[in-house]
Amino acid sequence: MIRSFCRRYRFFLALGLVNTLLLFLAPETGWKALTLTRDNLLEMLSFLPPIFVLLGLLDVWVERETMMKYMGVHSGLRGMLLAFFLGSAAAGPLYAAFPMACVMMRKGARMLNVFIFIGAWSCTKIPLIMFESATLGFRFMALRLLFNIAGIFLIALVLEKTLPEEKNLS
Image (spheres, rainbow, N blue to C red):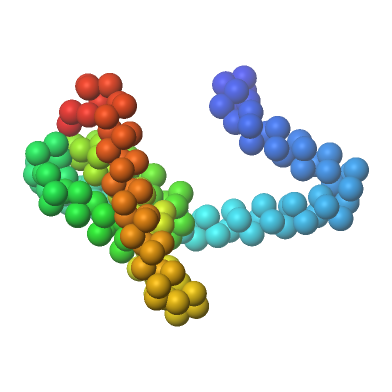
């Protein structure tokens, strides 16, 4: 029991040990590290519960057949655009996208659409686009968005093609 716990959380425990040693060897840096760790943990805990509630609702309310129809292997351009717009309209940090992607995969979404969703979540969020346009100018925002969209679709296609065939089928 304890051995499996230690094996499962060995990375976390090692970081805790390093942080503890840092407190004794360089107290100022150790306290900064602990403060940063606490702040990041609190931020993560503020995002995760609502996301898991939404994931639970998605899991219960959306039937597998519906997900396959709109985002499955035969969804075509409609599925790609839906994945892109879902990722772009999402709120929250990138680590919140992965549980959503997992549910999409379990429900039969095409891997290409899952990759597009994660790519859109990471770099084409609507608030980010509006902020860039206001601070860096429309031209910069438009060029970055154009290259990101092309990159998202290209990378998603390459990733899907490199997967074994049985992983691509829903």
